[in-house]
Image 1 (cartoon, rainbow over the protein chains, first blue to last red):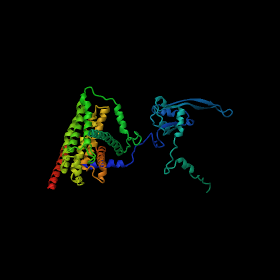
Image 2: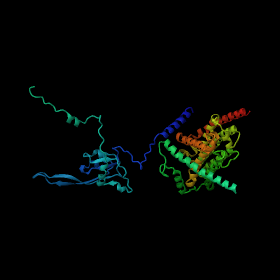
Image 3: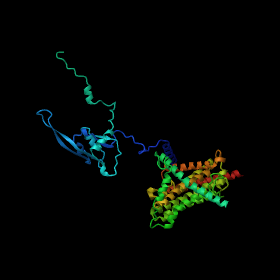
Image 4: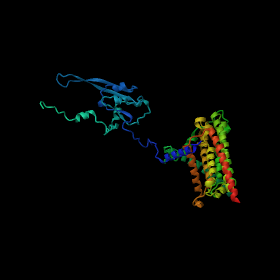
Length: 175
Length: 320
């Protein structure tokens, strides 16, 4: 019974203070949200970088990536040379009705063919339309934000350290 | 003929106020509560900051199906919303905004308003009893118990003001008011305010409709327009109680330029109390049923009796 009155006053003070502050409401359809660059919105495909290695499809926890490809034989460029083979991507599709936006495919891609885009307004009336084929996945590419700049106070990468190191002076003989 | 016309005109004006003021309070609650919780509240209906939200709600309620449960007591069930709503309309008619701006200036205004608004609780009891639903019945019983407990301190504190003014007329009481009343009638005013909130079944005294315990209490089985009437009666109740409080304890039309803008003062003071009632709902949690009864009988009734004694002694001493 003792703490009742201070408690009541505290409740009123808290609500009054909130009344004076700006609201937290995001007026979404009227005002677009400011999403951070690493937002898991939609996955974009840079087709040129894809080698059909299937790593993404195999790592995908819910198997929502479909890849078809075939091998093409390139004729030898020099006389008597060896013919080369390369993979040609026929189909790359992500089923966003199954995707759980974990981003493992983006992480696992060795050639940076997959990127996160913060775009999220691709709801569909028909669930089948959530299966994005490679042309649609490619259309998301322009919306991919540039990677965030490195932290200026971070440790320099070992490659840069090695490149900038002064050339070793080879001790001359006899000195 | 002229007298008849005047009666009709006054009735229409009161009805208009009765239909507009609760909506204003309701909209105020939407917006004030939203901003107190860091939200925006309705923003679309009507264009400007959702001013027409409650009109839109009304249009929605009209279109809904009016369901009467099979086992319900049909007539009582259908009548209950009217019983809850009409008393506040009657009460509003006798509350003066200034000595001249009053629809019907009855002699014993305090008695009339308190009696009329007490009838409104019968609506909750009737709906609870007739719904053929255990939650509705429990809620109705809670409403009845609440009414019985809080009618007493409310009447006692109103009696204190009537005693101080030496009249039961609302205009008479407000005319006799002076700023000193704010001080020596303060305990009575607090008791009256708490009891009014309890009688309106507003948070923190909304046990009859405590959704975590008894679904929606007496309103559980209602839908459509009848449900809307119950909601309207709640906000009409806030209007009546706020204006009544402003007239009894805050001096109604007393204020600068009271000759010309007296009614504005009364409405402003009433709006202040309405905001306070809304504020209480946002800031405070619901009491438990036994705490409610404890508060009424162990705190409010003694306090109101003490106030009454103080007023009586004061009046006797000063009237000599």
